[in-house]
Amino acid sequence: MNLILIALLVLGITGLVAALLLYLIAQKFKVEEDPRIDLVQEVLPGANCGGCGFAGCRALAEACVKATSLDGLLCPVGGAPVMEKVGAILGMEAAAADPKVAVVRCNGVCEARPRTSEYDGVRSCRIEHSLYVGETACPFGCLGCGDCVAACQFGALSMDPKTGLPVVDEEKCTACGKCVKACPRNIIELRKKGPKSRRMVVMCVNKDKGAPARKACLNACIGCGKCQKECGFDAIIVENNVAYIDPEKCRLCRKCEAVCPTGAIHAINCPPRPAAKPASETPANQGAPAAPANVQPEKKEEQA
Image (cartoon, rainbow, N blue to C red):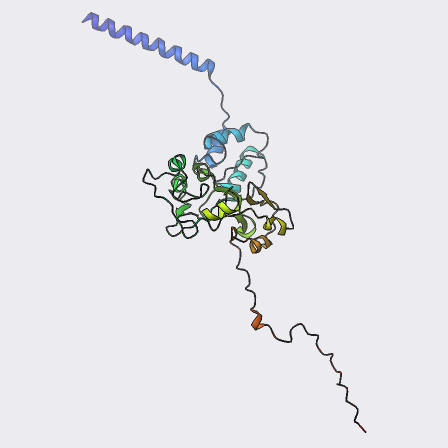
């Protein structure tokens, strides 16, 4: 009985000494944390999506507290209202940021890009992309397995069964960038929403030359450069046989859309263009100069 008591006493003393040592070590090496980090984290949405460029909301809160300015720091989920609250806590001004939205730069619908093979593996874009060109002849287009849909935690993406392409719900999209990272073919891009959510986008990333690109997809950009020549604002560049519209320079004149021979340029959320009147509806005397008002026609002289 005494041996048991002695053993318990030794264990108790050992545990007490170990706890005391751990406490002293923790006090000596503890790191003081700014209490504002917790305040900033409370106003963040807590999505931990990584769209801000940090590991999560806690990491963003720490970066905001340590920074001398909020320039370059943005929570894409909360947007400007959340950053204004962060600025109020830290006594800094939050720079206004233009809202962004995910854009799927592929218009290879089923009618334009018929299947050439059938994939019978795991339904994953990343896996299919690593194995071969895909079920169609376009090695750059959407694979249609829905990795972007699975990556979106806000329900902003869905697959259209008719086109086989992902569709973005702009009301739900927070521009977190998860779908961008999930797409192995880099066809999803975060772009500024633009005025009234209107944007001009080249819905193609095919870098093949005109003939092979057109053969793989009827809606592909063939790099002809007509849009670049038509643009009066230098907003379009053609590199690697594909055109790209710079949203910073684009003025939504839509001239590029009219001259694109394959329809690869799309005007998103823009009103429909007015239809041209047929030649038969044009009045016959249109364009002829009107007769001057209050002028009497000259009378012919009577022959004697």
